Amino acid sequence: MSGVALSQFLFDFGRRHEFVAERRFEAQAADAKRQVTELDLIFEVSQRYFAVLHADKLVRVYEQAVEQRNFHLHEAQVKARANLRPQLDVYVTEAEVERAQLHLVDARNAKANAKVALDNALGLSDTAPDFRPADVLKYSPVNETLPPLIGKAFQTRPDLKMLESEAHAMGATVAEFRSDYLPTVNAVAGYEGAGTGLPVINNFNAGIVITWPIFNSFLTTDQVAEAKFRQQELRNAMEDLRQKIILQVNTAFLNWQASMQRIERAQKALLASRAELQLSEQRYQSGLTNIVELEDAEHHYTSDDAQYAEALYGYSVAKAAVEQVTGQGLSNV
Image (cartoon, rainbow, N blue to C red; front, side, top):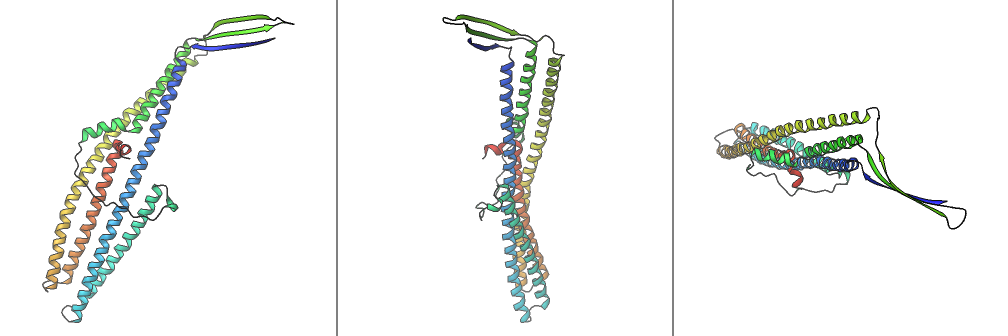
């Protein structure tokens, strides 16, 4: 006796089709989740990179401060030996030199820490080469408006796409479970040959098999209801995320605008303190003022220079935050 049997699926009222659709939407959700991770990583690396530029700028600010104070210390020492200035000027300028050196130590340490943090964000850590960023902190006018940014966020945010794909997948699950109310149709065919000698007796058969579950303890009903509740949960999560996106984009945009205003104010303050320092130096050299006024002017200039660097850093981070909350960071890479 020998034989062969064949079976071919024909129709199940969409169960297999919805099963394939569910897996396709789940794959899209998984890809969107990967993009969420990439977007967060891009923002983290951007922050770390701008922190390195900021720290490098502060190092140069305090190096200049040390240089200025050493020059004034030498000037005070020469004039004190010539009895043109009191010895107090020497002590005051020596103290200012040490304070500037202290700030420089802190700035260099902050730069080293920023470099380590950037290496870690890049996934390099102890294998990172020794490099210096070629870029500098800079800015440009804010030409964007809020409504288009919110629209871009709704179109490109991967976490919103992830929830949308998951909701579609759950919709396919609902249709998949609902198809269990209906039959499954298969085509079957077979051949059998039997006998004690040749020729054998041939037996061919073909037919349609219909499988229709009559009662399964309301399992299908409960599965459909559960899938609908999960789908509604995902829809609610999508609406909640949309509200959060509006809040995040508004906040990031306002911070971006404020950072531009801070740069403008910091620039004006730096220009004014530079002029103050130049006049104080001239007055001190002419003997029209004392060392306290000169050191105050130096302190104001150094502080304003550091504040300007802080404003540039804040602008860069605020712009990177806008690119993150709108999803533009992915398209810029």
